[in-house]
Image 1 (spheres, rainbow, N blue to C red):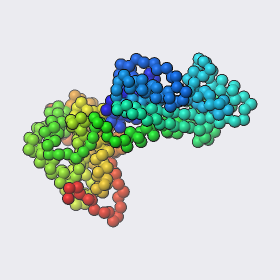
Image 2: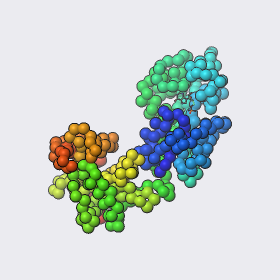
Image 3: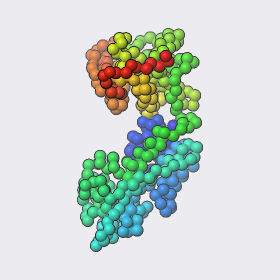
Image 4: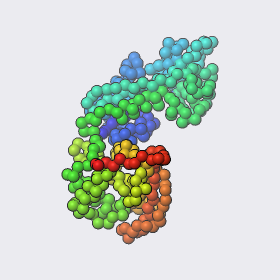
Length: 383
Ligand code: IMP
């Protein structure tokens, strides 16, 4: 689903994109969406300003939009700089604005302050939600530290052990800040919200899906070394594969607007009883559906199902180039598994020959449960 990040700030676009793409959104910056708009922040709260910005873009684009507004509130200054944080007292630089806050608190005992971040999410049907993150703290006596931006050199968060935000590693802020809190709320909401019309859905495979699934797979057989299969299987043969898998394991498809964009399934790792708790997993996406976080969604759904069955070990057999990437194969799949928490279990050198070249293969593994003793048996699907 398309989502526009309503800001002209490239840093914010990058941060939000990294968070939202794995959730299945195809993100566009305001600029990429061709929306050249500088919305006047005429609201009197962070919430109002975030909503103003998000709605202005929604009215033009009619797809999902997020916008945010943030700033510093100092109790003894009556909540200032507040929504005027970026232009406090009309001062031109961040340093001048920080000095103005320090000046305002000279001789004042109450130095309590908080950072606030409001994110407004407008859904494709026009409904909107606000997420507010607050980071409590106090204002320091003087500027300290070079990390961060804005008021970071004069803000000491209550959980920061007396350090200003600018004198702590950036990772601390990324995890504890007002923005991190608001983003976590947004992500939790997006993960749990009911599927929207047009949103991708993940469901069990049906026999009638076989032609489309084969079409997706055929691309990888003919044009890539991602699979070491060299002939596209016939439709009946592919149907047999699907029914053989679904006799015991899940086979999921991801569908958007009635079109299947990818699939994932698990199968036997080794046909010996002691291997029951291990399985091999496979994911394929239509070539035009990559880089939207859909592979991750399929994998997460598959893992959830396998976890319910009592499966513990997942194995993926991934083709990799023996040297440099080439036109048939890159390291993208192995890197995707690594990002998903898989680790390398072994490398098989030059073990596949396709398109007149030798390719390596790696086994990757991931544990999704606890190995116990006694170990309860696996609950096979469809039995
Ligand atoms: P905006 O949300 O981009 O409008 O930012 C408003 C202003 O609030 C920024 O220019 C900063 O001065 C201040 N601000 C917001 N978040 C932070 C932060 O995390 N650290 C320091 N200053 C911040």
